[in-house]
Image (cartoon, rainbow, N blue to C red; front, side, top):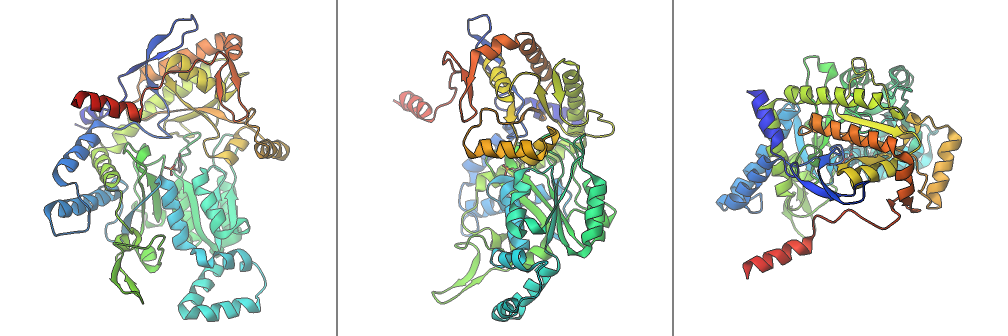
Length: 525
Ligand SMILES: Cc1ncc(COP(=O)(O)O)c(C=O)c1O
């Protein structure tokens, strides 16, 4: 049954069966089928989710957290069902883990966890006094905080370190630099084949031991699609007394995730994900993680309605239960329910089935790209040794990545992404930059000159991707390689790094807010 459900699900996505006008190198515009290869940035949306949202809006659209009327009750239940579906999708333990919704995708979730583990009001202490000789000021500060605050400071100073990797998306790097400062961050290197340097990881843990509070690592790279051995990493982290966060933004939608495998030491303590990367509209994020630790913190990023018991002008009492306490205000209800609907659908399909489909397409994409002369695929292409989820970044000899992306869009209606994909340190390594080249980049950025900005082209797959999509990309690249000089001659680049046609021709706009309303006005008259 899994395969039929998978097939039906993957066929029923918005925006799959459309054609748009494109330029042709022969002169006249023509219609070409849309090929979407930018799923890593945001996935297309399945119709089942839209149907679910329509049903919800029709039957129960209301604010949550009330039992006074049916719609409010149903909304509250739908949000809780969604939490549970998301948790089940990643193998949570409903007794020990909590599912928290956050705003702004995985970024919001990582930042939330960073605030929970390293409270903003104590961060300056970690940054200044970890590794520093005892200072009289610190004692005074601790006394002022009282017994509980002093304990928190001692705990932070005993384990001030975060270990992350050079492979991370900026969203799993910058929150940790902000939280503990560069001095307390250890960064696992990557090897020339794009994989994590596991020996370096071991060495860091051996050297730092119990001073490590958290290991923060991507389950799947958003640049190379390389799947990291996170359970192995978890075992080593736990042996050192640390916890582990896995950034599941690219892992959860493309593979089976089990936060609690049979070997308890291999468990994942915290997992973050992005709704819009797992086929749910909007930018809801979710953090699934150890309830005990989160219950112990008061990580109140926002205060207001919904998270308090009693309020007077003099005092207010914050609720004990973690989701309510941490989700002040009216939640993004459609976004949360959409994530729940997708999670439930993915559970029905079975993530192993879905991953199998994507692995086969990834194999085809990598092997066909490799065969094109002048194309260099980033990272190892030995998929048996280094498994990848459906993400492949590459360079085209003699053609800037920005121009490749513009050409694929303008002439072939193929959407790919180009640049550094919010993973600049990893891209710098993959491109073999030395310190001088990295410095040169920083200088070019500083003076606002992005014409020469380094980067790659990224093609990424989703459940709806097909062999025809890959074929279209390969044919288009073949054409680009054959007409390289002619294509280069058609385009120019601005200081902000935008590539556009010299003759000013642009692909037509296909959606406009005002046009939708104008058409509705016309039809209702
Ligand atoms: C691996 C990874 N982590 C985190 C993020 C951030 O996700 P969001 O933009 O949804 O917050 C991304 C986005 O591309 C990603 O690929």
